Image 1 (cartoon, rainbow over the protein chains, first blue to last red):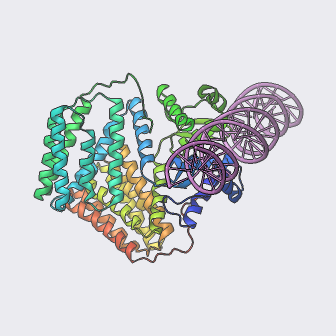
Image 2: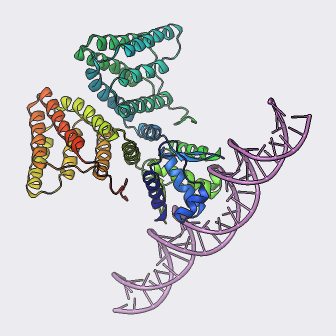
Length: 237
Length: 237
DNA sequence: AAGAGTCAGCTGCTCTAACCAACTGAGCTA
DNA sequence: TAGCTCAGTTGGTTAGAGCAGCTGACTCTT
């Protein structure tokens, strides 16, 4: 009865006092007095809020209002996908489809509207991808950066974060769950095509380029071995 | 040091033992023994997992693997939006744009592909909306049901849940944060247009119908008074 | 014999009190 | 002045006791 309330009351405290991200919360003893609960209960509430990214706890320093990133969502999504996969559902494929649905819809409204600096940055990223592909290094980082930079142009922080969150969840799960046969050169070519299409301002071409990119990933996914040997659903943060 | 680990180890336990949603977890004493931690620490870890929807705790009964719904994500998103709004950001508008971006992209691929039973159900919903509009009753429920039923046809549970989550977050925040001038008849008309467009199989028309719907909501949002009187960021569940 | 009431036992929930560990900053020392 | 040390703050962890919700078997009544 009390526990659920404590969380709500702490959230209410944050809102009422207009505490911004990074602002310090009352210390545990202060919260005990304010909420009229034992230290234990207060801590459990804080832990739950921490798990939601609402609060950030620093040992020996204090508790602060969290940055409220979508990190907890990634955790939850990743875990959900892993368990679903183990139960024989196509959860990973669904996650990929979710990304595809969003990105195909979004890239078309980006076509021709991306400012030159962003295009340059994307160009540089694709070049870097080429280098890495030649070296045989992993493309994950640059791929993530490419997608992040691309949708930054939408001028909607929330939207960008959601897209990145889905990217993170997908890659974390697919890395741990399936053996993906890499194919760097094709990936590079597809990203360059996406970039060119966006630059040209041709919405349909851009959309098709994204769709092609995802089709490639999906194919790799479906043709991959389950590789279910050693489970490790999550890496330590 | 230990606390973060405990969560991971409990998650690992769920994965390793292939526990499905609803399956019982070890009791607190058993977890204490298994994890080699005190009761308190175990409980804090469980509370955090509960906040993420990974675990479900039933007083006097036991702890179980949770349904891993996106409810926690709604919580987090809603809170984030509320605090952002108070800080003068257009967080609520961003949330609405996020929904619009997703739905415009998705409705086009639904056009002409929705099975007849779903169309009938949508028809019934719009009729019900008409009734309620005439009575002056709230449209929220039927609106939610309409959008949920619409995207059910995508055959992607995750996608549907994400859309519903965004719907929930948006409506919860907008209900608490701004005074929205209702306009039931226009809303009804727009939903009927969406339905007709989808039924006709005309992708572009469907997309435009959705866009029109959101444009209407956005207008109401921007023209509304802040209504910042009595904050209540979240209702008790 | 069938039904309702009761109680013992599980479960998780809350509290108290003590100590451990990380960090800060004032004061001391070289 | 530069560096160290140490006291005081903060959160982290443990222990043990009692409270509260639920289940199932046992008993008493009908």
